[in-house]
Length: 126
Image 1 (tube, rainbow, N blue to C red):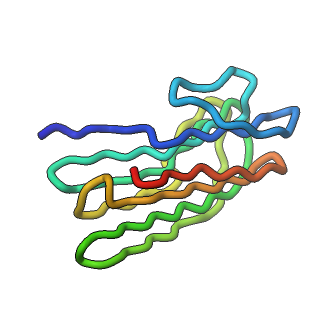
Image 2: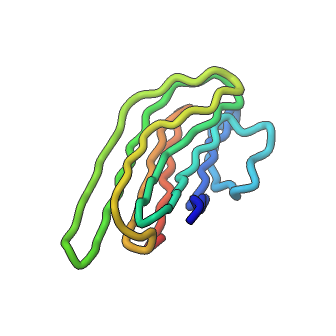
């Protein structure tokens, strides 16, 4: 079985205007300062969830990635967070976690703070 990537949610924080809005998985206008995405890959009952960011301009910020897994075997919770610095045009993985299971057993939340704005992307039952 090949890996099946999904874009769960995308988050955009605007640059000069310091406003925030959600973006589609197709990308954001060039004027947006930061695009963040939750990405899920499922292969052979192995699920990986990654928080990724791409900067349109150099910036500094923080992120918090929360992942919950619920299954017949119980519940697991992963919390990751920290600071990031991105150069203009740079893309990076902010945080990542892998689990045994199926995509439908997970909920994920990504909160990003940059340019004086805070936005949260949530997935409910991927």
